[in-house]
Image 1 (cartoon, rainbow, N blue to C red):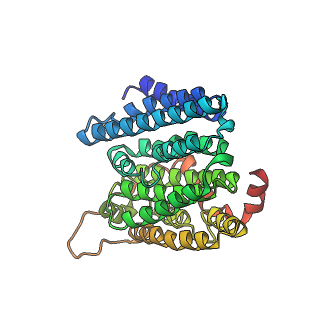
Image 2 (cartoon, one colour):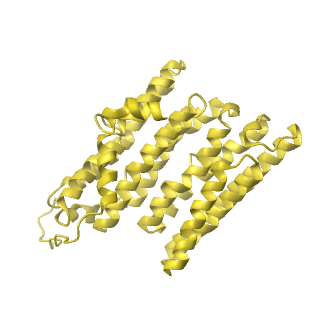
Image 3 (cartoon, rainbow, N blue to C red):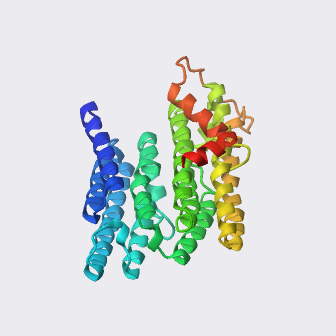
Amino acid sequence: MNPQANLIFIISLLLGTTITISSNHWIMAWTGLEINTLAILPLISKSHHPRAIEAATKYFLTQSAASALVLFSSMTNAWHTGQWDITQLTHPTSSLILTSAIAMKLGLVPFHFWFPEVLQGSPLTTGLLLSTIMKLPPIALLYMTSHSLNPTLLTTLAILSTALGGWMGLNQTQIRKILAFSSISHLGWMAIIIVYNPKLTLLNFYLYSMMTATIFLTLNTIKVLKLSTLMTAWTKIPSLNAMLLLTLLSLAGLPPLTGFLPKWLIIQELTKQDMAPAATLISLLSLLSLFFYLRLAYCTAITLPPHTTNHMKQWRTNKSTSTMIAILTTMSVMLLPISPMILTIV
């Protein structure tokens, strides 16, 4: 793709995200979401592969339907209350429609079917944008309307997302699809706590984005898309592979790594809200996703494929790992000891 065009699309993405997260009026938030959708479409379909075109079409259709629902819920609220302010979404029907629209935008169960397909059809860098920055505007809208959302509905969506994200990721061999189901599972953790402690949702999102960015950038550096190629990629940059192993375990939420922090705080908050059964259930369901993270980690750490046929060893890469990946990897693994400081900032 032309670098100038690429720059325009990236700037439009940042502009759309900024407009949505800084707006007070529903129409401005909707405009930001639309700019975002239109800016990411060329980035998904830039390879001109039939699967990329299919992914872009699916993305466009789901996002435009969700945007229409956002507009519909805000108009219903304005009709009943006379308010266009985002924080004044008080009408129950409006908040129900908005929850459905945001669930569709994010890829929460039962509106999750488009996300693994779109991620599978996109390049790794676009997949990174879809999994992180494209999730920020809808989560910001949920954050701003969290006081008027239905807790029962969100808890149900969250538990279903964690369950299906774990189950459906178990038999995947494509790494992008595994990361898509991992994203659905993490969104479940964010959705369950948004009504009770919205700041925890944001903290979870920031840490999830950081760990996912590390994994996508690492995979992009070693040029790996499938589990079978991941097994033989260790010779390229062995040190980066070792850190990828730790980042995957961090994304799974194992102590003493960074990913344990949001899970720990969410379980603590749910227990305070007398939701111990929900906390127990979501913790048990996250064991499903732990299984496929361990599978990925095993393929990362394995030094030879488990078969006897001769295979070509990959050449060791001469170029040094980028500073960005080094910083992100370190933060993805080692932030747990400074969690009190993180909590004071958040």
